[in-house]
Image 1 (tube, rainbow, N blue to C red):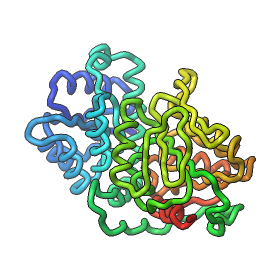
Image 2: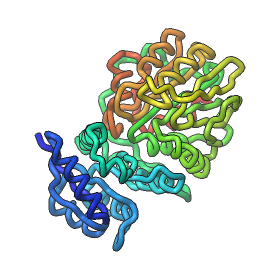
Image 3: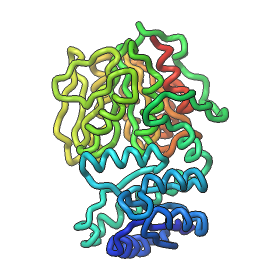
Length: 362
C-alpha cells in the first residue's frame, strides 16, 4: 500500500528536493505541493493525502494556522519541519498542540546533499506519522489537547476501550505513602500527552516527578518553560545535581541522559552515541529502580519504539508499579504497547484518566 504525501513549503527548492527524496522511496508518493497554508487546506480537502509535511513561515497563511484548519476540517497526520533553535522549539510545540503529530529539523544543507541516511530517516518518520491517522487516536488526541492559556472545562474521556488483564497490583488502593517518585516516559505525541496529564495535578502534589521525553537538546528548555506556565506544579529542565522535590517535575535535557542517584538527586550525563535515545526512558527508569525500589510509579505514554520496556522490567523486579497508556488514545502505540505485551503494566489507562489517577495519589 502506497502512503500519499502533500508537501507544504514556500521554498520551491525545498519542495523539489523533498519530493525527490519521498518519491525515491518505495511505498511513498507525493500527490501534491502547496506554497502556503491556504493552498494546503484546499489541497488536503481535495487530495485527501495520508500525510502532510508542513513548514511554519509562509505567506498568506502560516503553518500553525493551517494545521488548526486541517485538523478541524479534515484531520490528517501532519509532520512539521522545524529549525533547531529556541524559537523554532516554541513554534514546533505550538504546532503539536494545534494537532501536528511529529516534527523533523529543517536543514537545507542535509536536504541539498540528499544523503541516504536522511532519506531513510525521512521515510521512516513519514510512515510512522501515517500510522497515527489510522483509527480514532488522531482525533481523540486533538480533541483532548489543553488550551495554551486560560483553564477550560476538562475534556470528555474517550470512549471505553478494552482493558488489560486484571492488574497484578491493585494500584487504586495505593496512596502517597506507597510511592516516593513518579517517572513518566514518552516520545511521539508526548508533548501534548504530558501537557494533558500534568495540568490535572494540583500545586501541592506530594511527590517528585521526572519526565523523559525524546526531544532535541534545543527543545527541552522551551518545553519545560511551556509546561511550567500551564501547570499548577512546577516544571523545570533538570540540571546535574538537582534534588528531587515534591510538586516539582524535572524534564530530562535533550541530547543527554538523566539518572536518579542516592540521596534523591539527579545526575545528568552526556548522551552516549551508542544509545538510540538521548534521553532514554530505560536509563532513567533503571536508575530509579536502583534507588527507590518498589516506591516508584512509572508511566509509559505514547511513542514509537520500545524505549521504557527494559526499564519497566527492572522496576517490576523491584516491586514497583507501572502504568501504560492505552492504544485508542496513543498517537503512536509503540512504547506503551511494548510494556503491555511484556505483561509489565499494572494498569492500562486512556490518556484522560492518567492525570486524574495521579492526582488521587495525594
